Image (cartoon, rainbow, N blue to C red; front, side):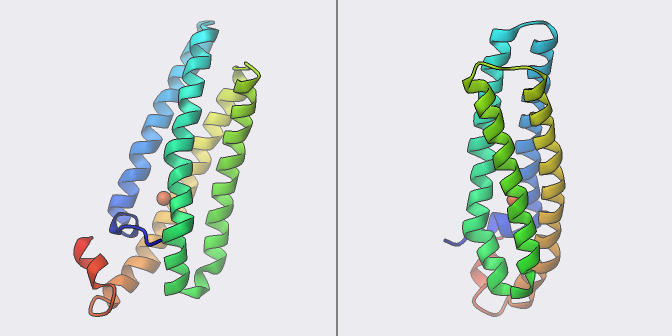
Length: 159
Ligand SMILES: [Fe+2]
Ligand SMILES: [Fe+2]
């Protein structure tokens, strides 16, 4: 599967990251506020919305990168293998934190341990996005421009 031009373009890719993280931050703040007011039932509802947000947006995004963008990066530059391995490991950490939160919520537990994990997700994702955007900008856009007379012209024109 080829990723659309949007993930191969650093600006549009960064916009996706930013929008999704902003929503995640708002949900985490809302969750922390409910907990500080002792609104446990409402906190549990918000935590479920937040974990499903991470699954349907960020983890889904990660999976499509592993099936598309990262495969393309390795095709363009096999020497990016270590970078791709590191980025994929970041995705794995995100998945593990999401799974831990889901376990807590399934047991009806919502408290600081859940908030800490949502905060960790945000921080790990921010760092991950920075490295990933860097790779797209420095390694993939340059190659795409170099190859603009070659088979990548469609992606270039559409991007
Ligand atoms: Fe990613
Ligand atoms: Fe990404």
